[in-house]
Length: 288
Figure 1 (spheres, one colour):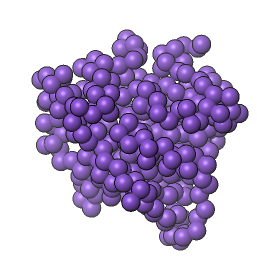
Figure 2 (cartoon, helix red, strand yellow):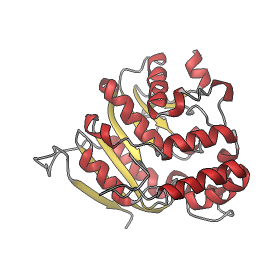
Figure 3 (cartoon, rainbow, N blue to C red):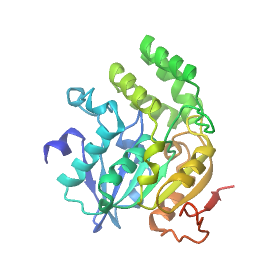
């Protein structure tokens, strides 16, 4: 195992010849995909890894400067693909990792046959003619609460993010991975994510993108998925699932897994072409 693989706890499973990379979002680790992985290993070489800063990674490897932007995480991803000698993959990115994959694909589009975005957002802050879901005051309160008492914040944030109470297995799982993060690193990562604005790079993403969104998500409003759809540089498709919460892989695997499997095997056909933008304009709803 190489240095990069060790640092990111890289696991390679399955017997397939095609590569699929599963990347997690804030507050989780590769265990986020535990319900999904068994459906892939017969057909794919499944690559799992932990983003730097996750509770499963060595905090000594976390670079506060490198990981102050999503570009730093994108370089990590490209390093993993290089070390594993992956020449093409399907990339499934949850939350911030969807944007990390998008950034990485700009410099190396040849490495990505498609990007599947789950609960993705290019900007969480509201702006003129843009609804991201948060005002700056909301984020300031979030950061202050994290800094004041991280464990108490985790107990409050996990049910909100997942969409349930502490009796929920999914909420308990997310609480566990949140607790595992070192508080100062968690605060830095959250600032990097929630203050990011990736809208300006979307037109540079030419890899086909499948945008999968929960119908109710406290972190990412449904309108954000349509914004992505309209501004990505290549063809894209949106599917809105009848699920609640920002981690539907944990809370609603029975709904999410069939949708993910369909999009992994689905090739985008630019049927309803928007001549001005060059973006495929299909929007689908599942589980309704």
